[in-house]
Amino acid sequence: IIEVKDLVINNKEKTIFLRGEEIKATATEFKILQLLASSLGRVFSIKEIYEKVWEEPFYRSENTVTVHIRRIREKIEINTKDPEYIKVVWGVGYKIERED
Image (cartoon, rainbow, N blue to C red; front, side):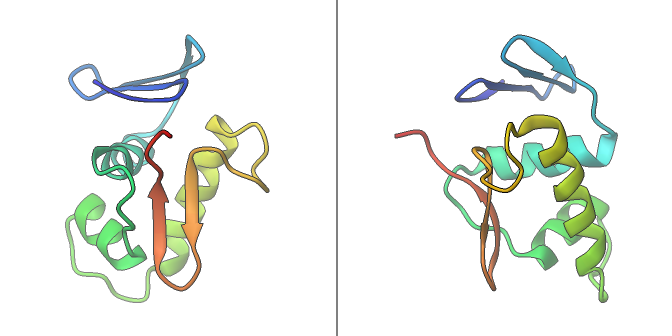
C-alpha cells in the first residue's frame, strides 16, 4: 500500500482511494499512478513511463502518456491547473512529490 497525502494506492487489490472514496481507474491509469507513487520525488520521463507501463519500445507516443496523465488528474486533483499530486517537470517528465 502506498499513501501520499489523502491518496491510497493498494497494489495487491489494484484499488485507489482518495479521501476515503474509491476512484475508478483503468488498468493503465492504475499502472501509471503506481509507477509515479512507487518512487516519490523521482521524475519519470514520458519515454520511461510509456516503456514501463505499456511494456514496449517508445515510438513517438508522447500524446498517449499525456492523455492518460490528464485523465488521472481529472480523477484525483481538485484543481487540474494546479495539481497537488502529479507534477510536471517541464521538458523532463512527471513526478509525485514526497510529503513535506
